[in-house]
Amino acid sequence: MAHQRIDALAIDWRPEDYHDVHQENVAALVTAKRAGETGERAEPAPKAAGVVDLMEALRASVERARSPKDAGEKAGTSTTRARAAGKGRPPRRSPPARRGLPVPGRFMR
Image 1 (tube, rainbow, N blue to C red):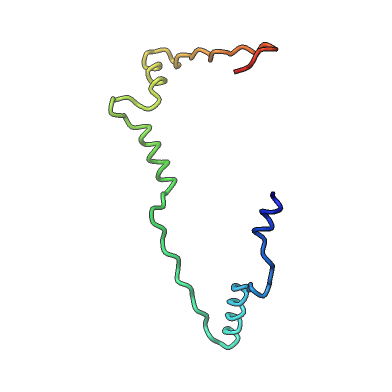
Image 2: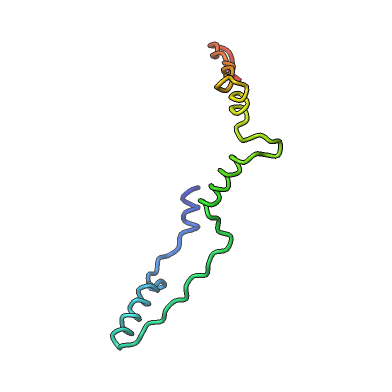
């Protein structure tokens, strides 16, 4: 089936149907320079719209994290609350629950 698909998409290769446009443009430029003519200059690419300055976005994100939020708390409130309460460090979390190993002969879910 794969061979049929490949054969259906295959075409006969005729190199005369293809030509190198870049090579033709360079040859025309060289010929023009030899004749003393100036080559045509391409117009500069237009400026892209909607480009985001990543450094500015990072600065704004850090600034938002540092500034007080609507509730009057800072980002990272668990650490801030623990230190404000005088504990010096945030409370520890309990370890995640462990799942037992599968017993041989039983189906695993």
